[in-house]
Image 1: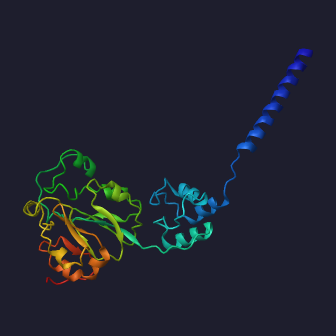
Image 2: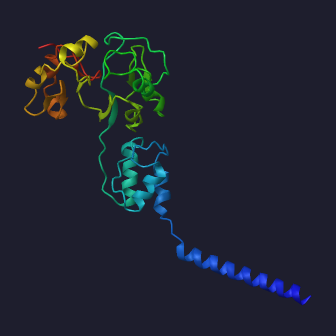
Image 3: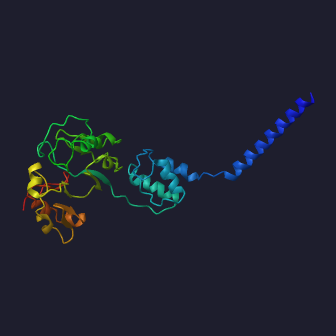
Length: 275
């Protein structure tokens, strides 16, 4: 009987000691959660798209509350309204957001781009690029299998009958998923009000590029001469816009001299006459 009582007392003592140890450990290692994290999560849209550079809304909220992140305007889906709320919660100045959208820098439609074969593999841009480079003559252009469309969780992209992905600006949140999905780096995030673009990424010499695509940049440099000094440059047979604002100011001149229309206005702006 005594043995049983002693055993019970020892068990009770060990239990008390264990509970005391756990309580002390809990108090010592307890990390008080910043109430602003919950407030930020309520303000954020909960898309968890990763456009902010974090794994999701929780990561962004914790970084903001902890002082590791000071940019209140990193949430693309939330826009200006969410940026204002976030700035208010963490005590930062309000940041004006420039609306950005995805833009496909290729006009290699079925009509414009030459096909060199009949691709019969997995209908994936990344797979096609890794194997046979797809069925287009231009190995720099859009492969047309819609990897970018498939990763867009906002319904802001669709594959057109022309074989190219198209962006619905009103739905685009500039999350960047489509940018990551394109193996040819054809999609860029640009300001919504930008006018002039080089819709080509072909680095081949002019005659070769033109043989693959009717609207390829042939590196003639006529547009560079029409643009303000330093606003455009010719690099590896391809024209590059260095200062978009300055180029937009002379949009008519720059676009008008391009013989292949590789340099063009965004479709939402009016057409210009050839100079």
